[in-house]
Image (cartoon, rainbow, N blue to C red; front, side):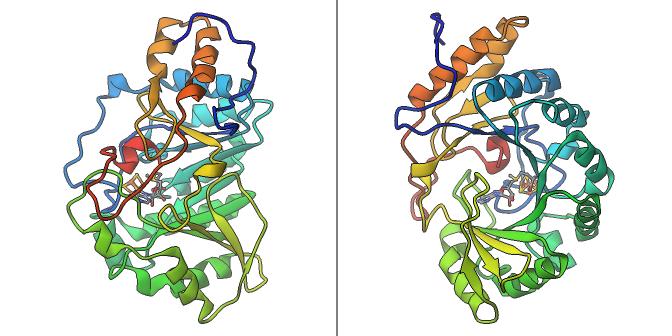
Length: 336
Ligand code: SAM
Ligand code: SF4
């Protein structure tokens, strides 16, 4: 991207925001097909175009060198990528990385929870939108809830610093389970974040405007039976947290529609093909795969490219529920 060497050692964009958080997608493939995330007939990236595990490690290491202190591995379903544990093991050893985290649908966690903990993973987010087997099957287009529930049990047993459920609430599909899900996390002393659906990619099964269920509505539903007290806790992500009934569980809200969080954006995303996306809601990106492959033994050009990418990080995004999506990438391709 640039030939001159920069003397910068941190990733700071033109709006003064420092990037300290990298989300890396291990794959765009998945063993589930959630209706809000994927269309029914997804085209996946040919395997040869994916970053290798070694390339993922090189990019993660360069980012940590430049001040990134939190990395989340996501996808697609990251635990379906063959050999992915190696990436966790290598990143888990990096000095300067305070937080190594994972977002997963939980289906493979029964097998992976302990090895992930041993590799240095600090926190895990597990996606679960319903507690009913038949609904889970519908929402994931044929998934088995038992696997995810067994994964949650295994994660609790492995004793991570924190475990959080990620739940997308859709009107007329699962909003009637908000209080059941609250009870589920409270009993297990784990956290939950409710996510507003984002218009990423074209989907066929429902109309995103009709299915919109706002964070404020979810909060009001919970408050019918529980107390929610605003917490100052920050985890480096966009969630706003509340303490549930003054107990161990926290409830977070990720509200891209009702509360824009761009002002404090501290993150960038790396797709499974090595495209560094500077904003979830825009297409500004640079191709890091090309740079690592062109310079197999020298990480200086990679560092320079990361620094230079800060010049094109946009100020923010505008998601609209009423217009056609401006972002044609589905969430699994973006690295959710
Ligand atoms: N497969 C893993 C999982 O499901 O946790 C990781 C990747 S998934 C894309 C990451 C998160 O994005 C999940 O919590 C999922 O619910 C959420 N997600 C997917 N599509 C979304 C959309 N259109 N709007 C909001 N959240 C979405
Ligand atoms: Fe797979 Fe996660 Fe997307 Fe569901 S949300 S289809 S589990 S990548």
